[in-house]
Image (cartoon, rainbow, N blue to C red; front, side, top):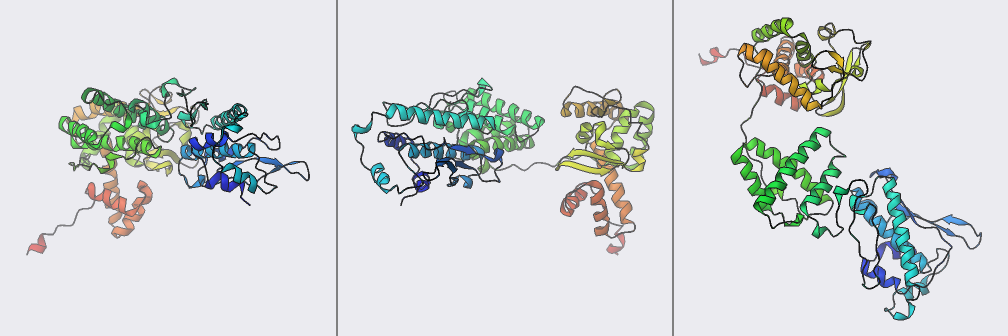
Length: 486
C-alpha cells in the first residue's frame, strides 16, 4: 500500500507537476486539519517537520498523524529548511484534497494520480487552487511570526496561474522594510538587492561595528562596479576577474594589508550569497591573500613607562586609570571602552567584559588596580566606566568612537609631549606589562611553568597562542652568549 509519506517526500513535485496534479483533483474532504510547519523556534540543532491531524473513522475524533520530516533536517540553513517545508506542506495538502486517507488502502488513488492528464476533471480546479493558495499563505504567516521566513518569502502572494502549467510568483516586498525588495527568480536578482539581503542576514550574527564595516565595504564595491562595469546588473554577472581587478586597485592605492581586509569581509558577504543559493560559487576564496609587512606596537622601556605614569598623574588622571586597566588587567583598549559599572563586582574584585575571543570573559582586578578605583557603589549600574569627563556616566557614542577618543587623547597628551612615533600607543602598555610579568615569573620558574601561570592572567586561549604572542613582542631574551664564541 503506497504511503502518503512516500508520495509526499520521495515524489515531491516540482511546480509544473504540482499544477498537473491539480488538474486531476476533484475531491474536497473535511476530515483533516490544515498541515502546519514546526521550526523549533529557529533552532537548527532540533528537527523541523510538517504535522497534521486526520479524523479516525472508528472513533470519529481527529488524531495527530506521524510527523513529516523527509530530508529537511539535512539542510543547514533556516531558509533552505523553510523552503522545503513549504513544498512539503503544499504537496501534503494536495494529497489530502485528492483523497489520501492514512486509515485506508490508497492503491487505487495512487494509480489514478499517475494517469495521463485529461481535461475532464478540471471543474473543481479553481476551488482547489484557492484552497492551496490559502494554505500556503497561512504557512508563511506562521513562519513570519517566528521571524524565520526569508525576506524573499515574506508577505508573498503565491499566485497560481490558470493559463500556465507552472506556479508563478509575483514580485515580493518585505513588509518590514521596503528596501529589501527582491524577486524569487534568483537568476534575475540585481547585485544591489542581493547585497542588501546578505547584509540583512549577516547583521543577525555580528556586532553593530562589524556590520557597519561590511556595509561600507559593500557600498564601495557597488560604486566601483557601476563605474567600471555599467552594463552588469545581476549578482551572477560578477566574475572572478571583476573581484580580482577590484582588489588589485585597492592594493595599488593603499596597501596589501588593506586589500586583504577588503578580501576577508567581502568573502564573508559572498559566502552568505552562496549559502542562500544566490550565486553558485564564492570566487573570493580562490583569490590568494597577499603577504604583508607585520606591524606592531612597540613596548616601552621601564624608564619610559614610569615617566609617562608620573606625567599623567599630574596632567590627566582619568587617562592614566584607563591605561592602568590595559596595563594591569591586560584588557584591550576597545574592551575597556565597553565596560559599564555593572561589569565590576566590588565584592569579589572581578570584572566581566566582551573580549576578542570570548562573548563574556571574567578576570580578577589586582589590588594594584583596585586600590586606584574611586567609589563606584553609588553610580548608575548601566553607565559607562570611562567617559571623556568622568568615571561612571552616559556617553552617546559607539565603542569604536569611544576608543578613538582615548587614542587621540593619548596622542595629544602623551605622544606629542614625549615625542613618541607611530609605533607607540595605548596598546603598547599591554605588551610592556606582559613582558615585565613574564620575565619576573621566569626568575623562579621554568618556561612552561611561567607561561602556564601567565596564560591564566592574560586570558590567552591556548599555550600556542601565548607562545606566538611572546615571540612577537620579544618577551623572552637569551642570556649573554658571548662565552659561546670563545
